Length: 299
Image (cartoon, rainbow, N blue to C red; front, top):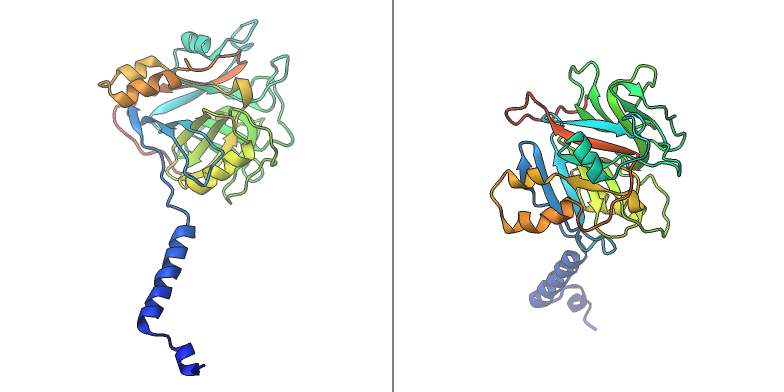
């Protein structure tokens, strides 16, 4: 065999190889992540139904709400603190509080005692810090200064003093995805509906509710790999207590569209049954909000 011919193929052969390698690289490179297509609900408030791409084959669609906390306030509610003998369902909570958006706050025992830190108006609602769970959703800094209006703290690295809380509202649960991209829950085969609260690069708060049964570890991987704007995420209670409700008034404020009509029932919870929730987090517009404001970044 001619050694020169072996080492120096004809140009057409070389081009074929280059094309083949390019095609191979293109076919094995993950597609660029496509984040949700947002539907406006109010200033600083948008909704979407997000379908992850082929990198998340076991993850069904998720309801997503994106909130600018500079325009909307988060409030914690616990049924005993409200003077109730029994926990309401989420739609009963909505009628009671008149919040525009509500979601389940976190995990609780069979007797409805909350598991982890739970603060309202700067006062503990009687629960103790969970020694293992390191996700903490916080809102309404005190003093307000330049701190973000709301965010996710990772108690493995962030500080929260229970005696002198730096935020008025707080709810502790499982850390799901940290700043390093590490999934912070165990990998198991258990599948359930999930509620996730996340923070994005712009300081917005994302509330996500899975429409299908998912593993919590798999959902964390999916958010990390296909939702690149998310920087931190924590998991609230899953299973039958995973709940998210958007008031119908938000869907009526703008002109109707096919998208809004098809989404409304999913976001108002008509497709699923509701169970009593001892603790919820509600969302309401700030009275002083008249124009869009950028959320405060973390220091």
